[in-house]
Length: 265
Ligand SMILES: [Zn+2]
Image 1 (cartoon, rainbow, N blue to C red):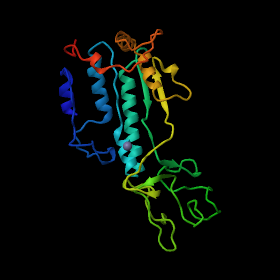
Image 2: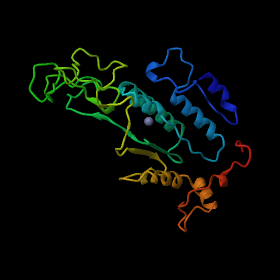
Image 3: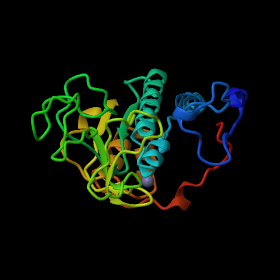
Image 4: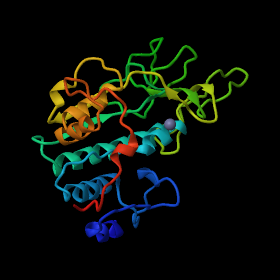
């Protein structure tokens, strides 16, 4: 984070804060030196605002995806909170009058959210409530085998537990399913959990957000962004990619957008 602050006046910045992926929030050491996603977002916006010509910034909470691939809902949820913090930081650093913030995902995962846990039941815990198949005196709702189950699980991934004779499912009664390393049960055993094919949400705030509604194809996101950024739209049209209505309809050729000098102009 200190190095990021030092780079404040730099013309161009490339930040590499770990030998590979940044550590999960859940594994962050108290003396960690790498910046948080929110801090990187703040730094990027402060840097880009200096050019005075507007900007497009993409911020990805990439560790959400990695934790899901590991079948590890707790780390995925904590990363989602860190991503939420980054969105808040972006909102605080910009104005709704001239900035569109779009929040979405590039795909879903196979995590499911199931059962009827009582209100206030911890999301990572076993289901408490009357949702079991049979009435029970147990603290937890139970399945047909009399075993408790978690609210969250995965359709596939490394959390699969092979059935034992007389035990089709693991007995979670004594298992701390809220532990940071607990892997939710999966239906199909895979080394890594896969992406899912669900529709994903898109949330919008600021200039141009009114256009974001209903069910849309993913390529429409590009048009939300272009229509909310007049300078970008002008530039795309100047490159001949627009139709008579001024809507970019051709794929821009990267060669037409080569930087033409110092980015600090
Ligand atoms: Zn992925």
